[in-house]
Length: 112
Image (cartoon, rainbow, N blue to C red; front, side, top):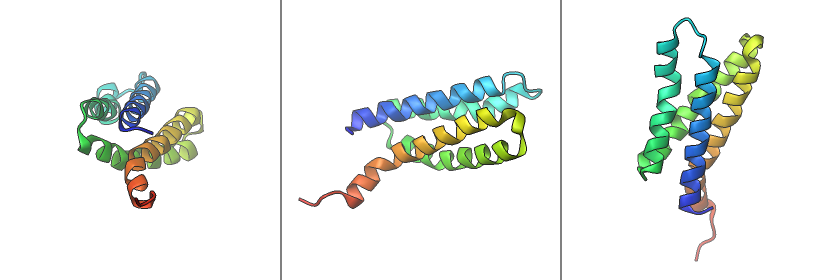
């Protein structure tokens, strides 16, 4: 996967994750807090990734570990919102994979 395709894939995953959070927490009693904590970070990271900021992909991978943990916890403890939690969990795994791909290719790729 080229660098450009990786950037667009990662940005798309982050935007999808932000959409999941925005819909999931739309009726929450603490709407503003949930949007600031859950929806805004993936949006900002997507903008950074599209702008070509190298640290944005790194931080997306780091925060995806938090999103993964939150998804697992929510899926098990709140069965009524399990589909949203599973969507978060799967998107977080995809973000981790795409953001880690360049480093894994450099580490385990063929030497010339």
